Every structure is written in C-alpha cells, then in structure tokens.
Image (cartoon, rainbow, N blue to C red):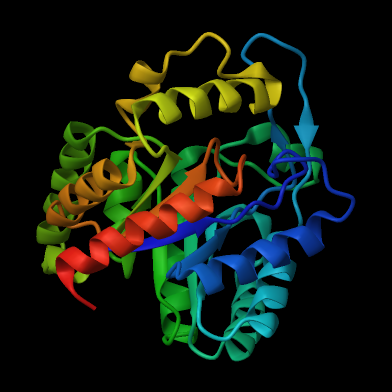
Length: 308
C-alpha cells in the first residue's frame, strides 16, 4: 500500500490564505517528497465552485495543472506526479501528447496521466470548449487513452470515474481511479463491473491497476479527532460541512487514529487498491499541516507491519 497526496493548489486549499498559490503548491510537493509520500496528484480545472448547495457560486481558480506538473517535475527527484483527472475535452489530443511527452522528460519516468470524460458543462462552455453528449465524450476519451498509451508508452494512463461506461474504458487503460468518497461495498461493486469489462475484452483484470482517492482526517485519539473535525468544519470552503456529523462523514472516507487509518488502508490493499490518495479535509487541500505529520505516523505503522 502506498499513500499519495492530492496536492493543494486552489486558493482555498491551505490552512491560511496565500499570496502565491503556485509557489505554495510547489512547497507542498517538496514537503510530500520529504515526508515519504509515493505520489502527488494535481486536478485539472479552470475553476471549481465551492459554494454550498443552493447558494450563489463561489468560483476558485487553481494553478494550471500541466504547468504545475512541469514545475514539480523540475524541482523534485523521487516522488511520482500525476494529473487527476484531465478532462478529454480540455486539449487537442495531439497537443496533449506533446505536453505529456515534455513533462515526462522532466519527470524522468515519474509521471502518470489520469483522464476523464469531463462533467462540468458550464466550465467547458464558459471557456469556449465544446461539451458534446456523453456518448461522444466517452468515445473521445477511449480514443485519447489509446493514443497516449501508443505515443507515450512509458507513462501509465489511468481512467478516473465511477460510471459503468467509464469502467469499460478503464478496462483498456493501465489503471482505474475513483474518488473522493467510497464505502467498501460501493468500491467492490464498481470493481466487479471493471472485472467484467476486462473479461469481456479478453484482458486479465489484474492488468488494470487500482487507486482510490479519499478525503482524510487523522487524530491522535478519539477526542483529538473530534477536535480536529470541529476545526475542519470551521475551515471548510462554503461552510460545506456545517451540518454534517463526523460519524456520517467518516463512513465513506479515511478517518481515525494512525493505527485505525493503517488498518483501513490494509483493508483497501486487500481489496486490490495499490495507492490511496489522501486529501486532508476536502479534495486537493491540506486544511491543517499536522495532518501531514499524522500521515507520516500512519505510514510508519504500515511499514512496521509489512516491512520495507
């Protein structure tokens, strides 16, 4: 089992407001490398809406995905990097191949690409991009996945998503990712769908790697966990967690003491997941830097259990 980090790179992503999001994101990438994380992942959006349901939009723009990945590749030496996920309609496929090739050269074998079909119609259209029907987007995704695998074979290509049609495409890729919340029952159901898709195509299901993104909260003990939950509720963008209980939130996320989280990670590993991508609080955020330290404690427990 390996731990990845959903890299903070939005204005809301950090414990406190930052004047330079790009520089701060780079600092966290280097911190993740020093802490022993296996990989950092960067989302690919023009903006996200962080407003609570039913409230006016609060758009926040991240550092551009592939620019940031290039910078991380050039300023780190060990940690793997990846996009999670690049919508197929954001870039011409041939241009994407050129971008991936350049970043892979900088990364020297440390790059992964996760692709998606795209889901935010308004984000596409507001930036002058087509947003065709799902069938057409899925066909484009399938074609682009194969183009990348053929043209940049050194770079693992993942498909990110939960729907059955996406899982059919994942069966042709190097790996499959789903995020940011999942119960074990939900995961096993989707994994069974993926296995069926692989068998239908005559492919060994074990040939498709699995990763899982989970929003994460770690505390020293139960009292500390409750205290950190209240702190997270106050911090959360758009007041999104104000009416949510820790018990309900934890059911589909990675939550507990380092020992408890290590136990959860072992169960995910037994289910076939090779990497859990942690996001501390909300996707692509570190709401409290002590979460990194507690994740290091968790990795140490895993290492003592499984060896180097």
